Length: 389
Image (cartoon, rainbow, N blue to C red; front, side, top):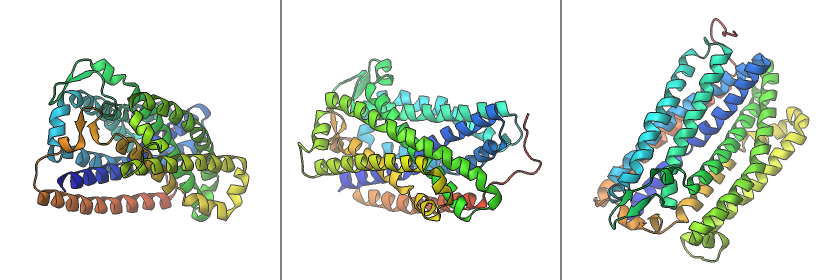
């Protein structure tokens, strides 16, 4: 029961955290694109789009930080034996994530939050670019840690813990880089769907004076969706080929060579992910080819408004394949999940599970309310206008 509840709590907190992470990682890249178009083309509608989607980014970025902190606390409370075993390896990536990536993105996010309406075009582009670099570096260091769990390199197992011997091998672990590329493409797909859905809402129910601006946003979102949806199968194929060499048991689960329990869940999750990935190509191709029809069809606009859950489901299915596919190991080939848990009473775990569930439910309501409120507010300008120098 202790192991089951500990695993459930960690799975729940990660899944909830991932409501915010891929959206902000992908959305900031789209904002960079809008800022680049504003800087080089000088068209003010791109500045307005950047400001609008930046507000949505900032709301979800804040909630992502809160849920990320709660997730990390569990390493010491529910997974103490695992934390001891992984301390030498986890220490460097997580510290670097904090002092380099998080400080970089949070500093420039603060500038963007308070000063973006008062700085020049050049500084606007620089600031959002630094936020994008920070979010990418943050993802890299977290995925570096996870990549080691999947493919332990650069450290030796003493029988009780991992001892770091080559930090460069951990950083350049191919598993982590395959995972980073695949995750970023999935984040871009999710954010493309989000921009398309929000634009669709405005075409249906928004202000008439905002219509042309959101048509532009929808067109960019459709093309972004198309390119990322086409690229991700190539990324996934390369990723799977590499996995076959280091985690053949996971590939056996995916192909159905091994069935029963979690193995069947992995196979179904993989099939679900691939199927939806194919659907995304069809959806984005249709949106690009019949874009003019989309701008006048209320039916299509309603459909695109409600597609956002699909990429979320695909991402969750992908993580199920990644994490369940390495079972029973928490450190692949060295430490089993059952060996990594803390020795704590079941009553304490039930208390934390219920507490986190209530806390996260409140967070979700707050995030949803703030995000929807900002979406419906539309394109608004600060008093005094903007600095266009």
